[in-house]
Length: 235
Image (cartoon, rainbow, N blue to C red; front, side, top):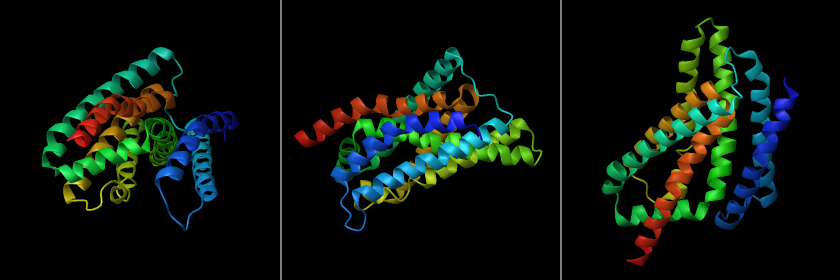
């Protein structure tokens, strides 16, 4: 266990815990879950996956790059490619097939969640969970099976991306009241797509590069969604 890794990674999770806690406190009302329980759950999640990565990252045959040039090259470069290609998929494939009501529900949900929650919880904590924690675990397991570094890495990226997509499926009913199969298909494809680029960035540039990819996904999309939200509610 690399205790320095654990402490540093958990610390960078704190803003995401804070912003998501306040976002849920305002927008999600469940009588059986208290605000304190939400806060504890987010904190424990961040701690567990911070510790998981701190244990497995030093064991895998993948060097964690710390050079700023590598972080920017893979984090920003792959982040922009991932984000722009997703926007094409979202606005050219999904949106034309949605009813106005469904589209309004989706855009309202994203706006209500808030950019800070999306950037710092999605962009940081989800990367700590799925790349720092799970991806490093899977790479370690596959390398232990003597599958080779490249094959281990590709399999691990694929599996962690599928899991990343799967955990987003239950939340669809929070986004839209009557979700259609099309929305599930979009959610799976879009999240596997993000997972692939974030996973590749993690391998090439480390955790910060993966975080940049995920943050840019939300930051590039945010102004477009705000504009669409205003347009929908002005009609």
